[in-house]
Amino acid sequence: PFGVLIIGGGPAGASAAIYTARKGIRTGIVAERFGGQLNDTMAIENYPSVSHTEGPRMAADLEAHVRSYGVEVVLGQHAAKLVPAEQPGGYHRVELASGATLQGRTVIIATGARWRTMGCTGEEDYRNKGVTFCPHCDGPLFKGKRVAVIGGGNSGIEAAIDLAGIVGHVTVVEFLDQLRADDVLVDKLASLPNTEVRLGRRTTAVVGDGAKVTGLTTEPREGGDAESIDLDGVFVQIGLLPNAEWVKGTLEVSDRGEIVVDERCVTSVPGVFAAGDVTVIPFKQITIASGTGATAALSAFDYLIRTPAP
Ligand code: FAD
Image (tube, rainbow, N blue to C red; front, top):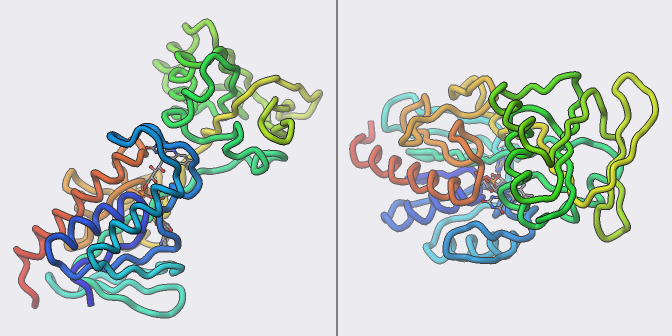
């Protein structure tokens, strides 16, 4: 059994492991794949002190750093159920889909999130070749160019406002007949001269020249003539889904399905902590996930020294 059992090997889980291992606590990490979303990212240029790296390289660097402390790393495993300790200070159990069970006096959940995709032709072919999810990460790659934002909710309109300051022109494509974002954001967008909104349209294809995106095809939701837009980038902003389905009913989650934590990353179950994209903590970024992983680790340490075993 572990002192700290961490579920998830992305930036949040890795950072948590480094902190608890350095406290001398027996630490285990279980993850489907080390690095999490980093593996799907090409350039990373906003992690302080690292002016440029690539996602798979950062994932490998993180794994090497974690292993250098003797953390037990179990990969290729899917956590399926959390069974909280029956008494304070007792062992929590995590059941894996493989049938195995692991135990920890504390558990840190850092299972991250996944982006909802459009599911249209060309989207996967041009992922990271113009199709992207992250305006904070990839906006500067489209300086002066034409881009589209798919989705007119808060994240879509925030992305469009952010991008309008960097790129040449932004077209927002929304499936419904009105934008779902807050009025203040919609008004701000309307005040920006290099933006345009296309309502009631479904994106049917991302088109490109084989190497990169050159345009987008949309059609009216109710059917009608397709329309093509020439552009260089497509930012998909139709939702981020937290990987928290497996703890619903055991831990408190928000109406968006994110694990509810306080500023110390404490969940609704004593001895269980959560960090990174799977939580209600706003702004899904590597530096934030890493920081909250450290917070969760220090909170777990605090719990262990204050809570005697039953
Ligand atoms: P994740 O990275 O999602 O890691 C989750 C971990 O949990 C993985 O190890 C996964 O295998 C594991 N896991 C999930 N479910 C289970 C389960 N049931 N059982 C076992 N293991 C499980 N941020 C930036 O700051 N800069 C960027 O340039 C940047 N670019 C990005 C580009 C793309 C394409 C994407 C998708 C994201 C980008 N981000 C960027 C966001 C950043 O990657 C995330 O905020 C960060 O990875 C979140 O870290 P995390 O540890 O919370 O979760």
